[in-house]
Length: 440
Ligand SMILES: Cc1ncc(COP(=O)(O)O)c(C=O)c1O
Image (cartoon, helix red, strand yellow):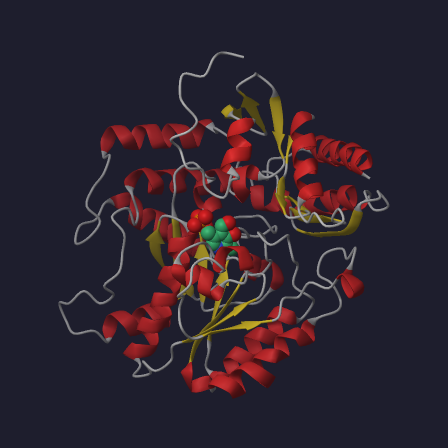
């Protein structure tokens, strides 16, 4: 292994056990298609598309070239009160992929910013309609919406909330839908649990009054808390309740967007259309940060057309909302998805993927396997008194054997790039099987 020419200490790593990592670092130095290479030259099969984002595979020449060309042509242009062609083109391409009726796109840089932006758009919309009193949010337990104060408030991951005190003041949460007793080893959407959406109508709306609620925000398939697949008819039920009471429905598709579930968005795979969609990650296949919010035309028109003429209608945006490198990356990525029919490929591979992961049933520490599109969660029985320890061991052993997985507590999450081959799906399952047998 070549010596490192950099110190480890000054960098405060995100969502990482810094001391543990720095004592035994895991450093990736390059990537190509389905593989990473470590500093010691080991090839690692990417079972997680980086962090759920590299949907087109790594270092794809057409995307790399588009970024390079853009850096050489227009590196940056001010994005407030000025424009550049790429942001308009990229927005049109994203809108084309979105469910019918959602056709305006606001850009941000990260999923967390996209979530904050979506919450602000919801407030701006209600206010423009004379309903500025709507400021109660409804999130869901075990929901992950990034790490901004908006996102942690509507999110339901205790570790991201407990240390950060004041959050948005008026938030309620739906119950999560995970139930091992009822739904363990479900393939695709579980049968049990649609009624869990009813709590919106039976408890939350009566408590706060519908007239005060701004929006309900959920991930259609919860990713970061361990791939929690929505029960059949659950999202349909949420949509119906929101419609009955005039609440906006936001789908956070930061993970599920851009082919992960076999269509551009999970909204289309499942057949439920929200009012706003947040996206990030796959829009550039992880190459350059880009994120955003897609909204129904009426939301855009209400906020924009009801503002006084010649004013900035929505005083919100980031220095890099539609950065030229990011929009160039998005244009090239979306073209590649189209050219290689990668969303169809994900849909066609999904049964094979389902078969491969469910074949692990019976390996002793596994207490649940669940899947949707090219996402799967494999839940392990925690070691007594040591929650998360077995999951971390599995992560390390997989890495030693040349496979990158993501773990959240004792749940292994799989979300490979959409270019994965059937043989590589089998390789993931075989490596996981041998690791889990060791850990039994
Ligand atoms: C559903 C969802 N929303 C928001 C985010 C936050 O995105 P970011 O890490 O880009 O801020 C994530 C990140 O994984 C996510 O999964």
